[in-house]
Length: 78
Image (cartoon, rainbow, N blue to C red; front, top):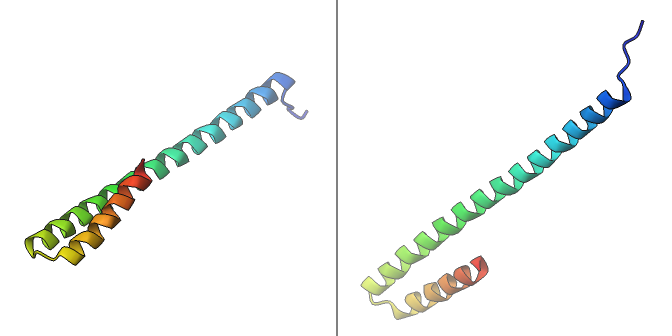
């Protein structure tokens, strides 16, 4: 005799599958947020270092260019 799932078992199985799909979606969003934050922090630190180098070299043109990029990066983050 074939073992068939009852309606209750099928509904539990479906609910469990939906919950797993939701968890995966949430984890994907969280992973994207962590990656975006890491990229942002890296770019910010790199620009800060380049701005400091431009100041040390008294390169006004480079400083202004990098400052504009820095402001744009910060504006995108908010």
